[in-house]
Length: 150
Ligand code: DQA
Image (cartoon, rainbow, N blue to C red):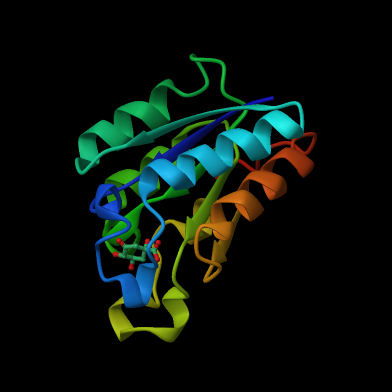
C-alpha cells in the first residue's frame, strides 16, 4: 500500500521550532522514521511539506490519481480554520488520518477545535513523531474499510 504523508505550515521548522512543544526531531528525521516503518511493513510512503494551503489542496485532490491508498495529514495551524482543506478531505474518496505532534486538546483554546476531524477517518494527537507512525498504522490496518462519503 502506498501512503501519502502531508505536513502543513511551519512543520519544515521541526527540530528548532518551539522544542519544548514539538521536540528536537527534525522533519527529515520524521520522514526517515516513516520510510523505515513503512518499508519494514511492506508498504511505501511519500512525504511532502508545504506552507501553502492551495498546494495542500492540490496534493489531496491528486492523491488517488497518483495511486495513494490513503493520507496521513498534519495540517498544522490550518487544522483549526481551513474550510478549503476540510472540503478537500471530504471530497476525495480516500481515508485521511489527521495527526498532531502535540496534544492539541491540552493547549490553547483555539487549538481544541479541528475543522478537519469530522471528515477525517480519525485523529491522533500528542505522541510527538510517533503520532505519524500511529497514523500510518491506523490507515494501513483500516485499508479494507470503505471511506465514508459525506
Ligand atoms: C500541530 C498543532 C497545531 O495547532 C499547530 O498549529 C502546528 C502543529 C501539531 O502537530 O501538534 O503547527 O499540528
